[in-house]
Length: 79
Image 1 (cartoon, rainbow, N blue to C red):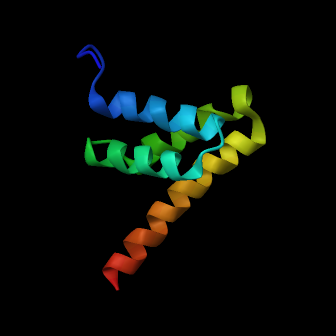
Image 2 (image 1 turned 135 degrees about the vertical axis):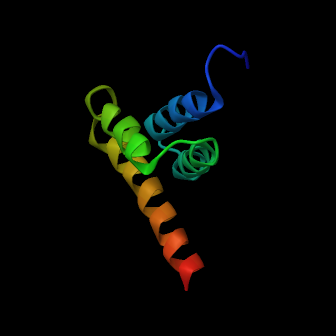
Image 3 (image 1 turned 90 degrees about the vertical axis):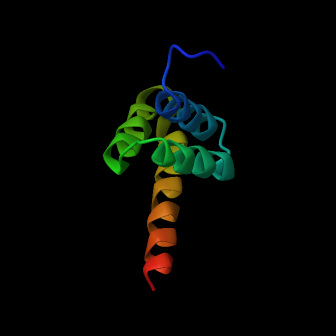
């Protein structure tokens, strides 16, 4: 990929595309990468919310499940 867009932005775009394609594992992985590259959970949620109009409820649900999975992972890591 080029350098015009920051990695965080590219990962947020990839998250939305994977959610639209109905791929929950890839959506989750791109969400984690976006976080590693500086995205906040609020930014993840906003990217997921943005998918609702063009992708409908199934796309939104896939994105939301990825975010909830990240939350569950963090709870497990805390003990």
